Length: 172
Image (tube, rainbow, N blue to C red; front, side, top):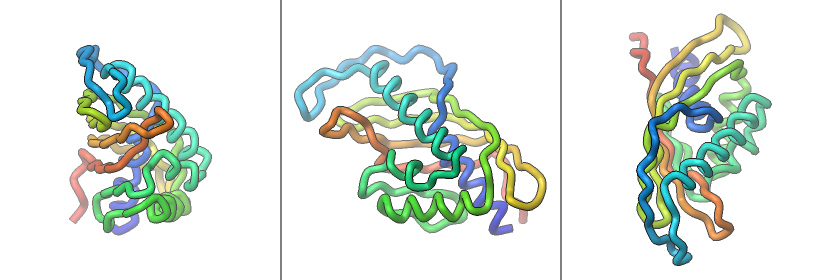
């Protein structure tokens, strides 16, 4: 039971970072960043999708360190059935434990909304994944997620908060 819950939770992490979206157009809203430069939602959404694609590639390779590299040092990941992973090192360890149990065979997510306020962006989306446990049948999962991103001094975006949950009810 614990493994099944962890697998479903991990599906969200995988879903947080994917390449393709078919989301409706995002409103072109400009807001000032701490660096004083104007940023529009569409460019932030594109940056997030690029980061998501990088994460997905690392996840499929089983590279927990690369998966965690998209998070800030003080990030928090909240997965169902798991204590929060606090900090990049704990996040890397969480991915390592997850990837020791499963392989991501396919998957994707759809960013359905990006809200932008200064140096913070909030991504809302859905995911659909197939994961293959090291033993047992493959699991297909769908769910939703909410990810907060923070604009970095180098111009990139990193995840500061990450939460997801499956649409599949837990087995009692």
